[in-house]
Length: 172
Image 1 (tube, one colour):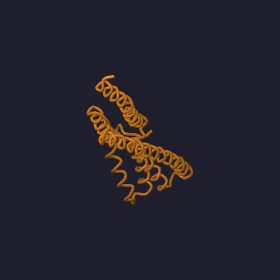
Image 2 (cartoon, one colour):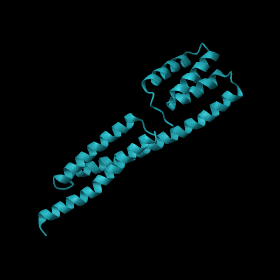
Image 3 (cartoon, helix red, strand yellow):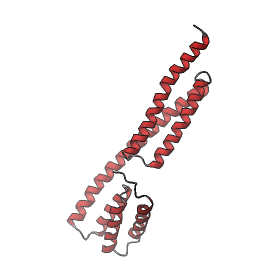
Image 4 (cartoon, rainbow, N blue to C red):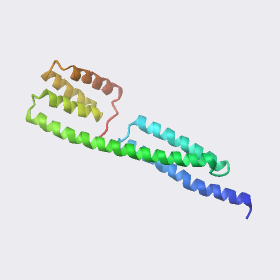
């Protein structure tokens, strides 16, 4: 068999391994965005890093083998996949904790509707979940019960700004 043909087959084999793996990482990022586990900014950064690893890897395959750049791209891709997995796992855990906290604070509000702190904490959970309408309503209620709270006033202003600038951003 001709050595050039062997080199082409070897490159195709390497590309058949490398390209689908990169596609899986990109799909993982995209599906995390669809599930709203990751924000648009986080996915954009992840896809930019994935694209960089992809072009380094494809460039090394086209240039004749794995070489230093190919190994670098594989290590880079593996680290990226591990970091994304850890981050997504952390974000899911954080979301589960926030939903648990929301349940606790809703019960506290139901037990004592005049509890300004419970309204404030519930609104803060809504804010962290990027539920800006609910957060605004909660902070307004907390300020109605405790008009002296500078913290609630500041968080209310912040929630109103986010509601205006990011009406599409929610984590549910």
